[in-house]
Length: 300
Image (cartoon, rainbow, N blue to C red; front, side):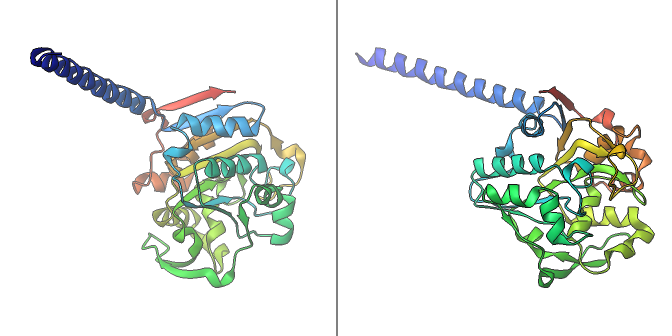
């Protein structure tokens, strides 16, 4: 090859590389534009719809990196079986645990501060044995690990919160959708009561404002709302299977306000019907107007 041929080949190769680079940028731009704000997956398998919802947001590696210590916060608040829809579906929890380990998480911690006896709640929910079998660290909360933290909220200026939530590299919120006697519905934002110390029932006097204040400082990288079964009456504890409906749905998103706003539609309501959603929206914590969001619906 002479000098002229060499320069020509080099020029053409450079053009080819540039075009590949442009093509890559275009593909990245298209993929970014296609990513959903919320993913709503429906199907018979809780594991499959959980995975599908997270995949629609870009996959677990969009949220979890190799070496991360991850806290997963389900609702294990009551001494109830999964069929009674008072606690997060164990298949939803274990699917997220698996995904975190697949993404290279160093450690996955699963815990809650239940209302009923934690020894029974952890087992009856089905979460503790199933998550432990996958290698997750499932422990009862240690009362010594609550620390007074500044919230500077509308109502909560300071409150003892569980330090492991803030020491983790990433936090994932795994609530269940259900009726609540005081909050109307309990979903993502209210699930953070499970990391509060002290006399947390005292916040019920200004519950909506308090839940929004908690969301000021607790920032999950991902929220996965379990609506495989939902409790439509006599919540949050339930107990009667007549109060349970089975939408076979999982909703995933980064925005807790948006997740709760969509969750409300499963009960024939709007996000604006929930005080803490309205307040969270006003405080700039998220978006309750679903018309402003890109929502991807998947059937599995």
